[in-house]
Image (cartoon, rainbow, N blue to C red; front, top):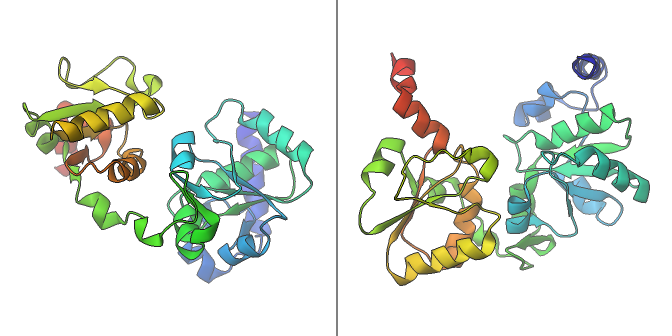
Length: 273
């Protein structure tokens, strides 16, 4: 309750004294209205201050390992030790701490600033244009699958991702002798519940070696991979690994396990009525 009250007060104060957000920038970055207390850095500001700021990637380890800003530190905001690690980071540098995540529709960078304020850690900012804008503008200061500089053409666009999506019903209908079904949720998300018992393989994204062996198996046996995660977001990062491994036949479940559960429970039909 005390934490909620603190965040409410911070938000109110932020609306009274916005950190330089113009109406135009707020329209481009709607998250700035939701987190008015979070001071922000623009893309060019981050580039100009490289070496004079502490860049912190607050996404998952898997996302960070796939594509990141060169020199950034990974400190996932979902890590239960986030507070402690952030305090340790502040103790090691007086430079501004700049958080970033995936971009406009991702609010983790703002949430990290909000958390820092609660912890009384000052001089923190959100670079809210995100990793994709950065990688396209500064490929020499980006790392893709451990390689740098990167080729901006290797950034997977929405259409290329969308062409590999199947709705939950269509996903299930595709299962056959020439397919391999992969549940890539972690053990906390999965909670021992699988949708295709006796058929699917369970390999979490952080099990890199096992996952790579499965990708090679599918490629070698010319089988189509049918892959689902929790909500349809994590598989976007897996696509980079699939492309890098030369796997061509693969599909993801649109909306992930949540969408499949909604279909089974009839929630989708109820919402359409």
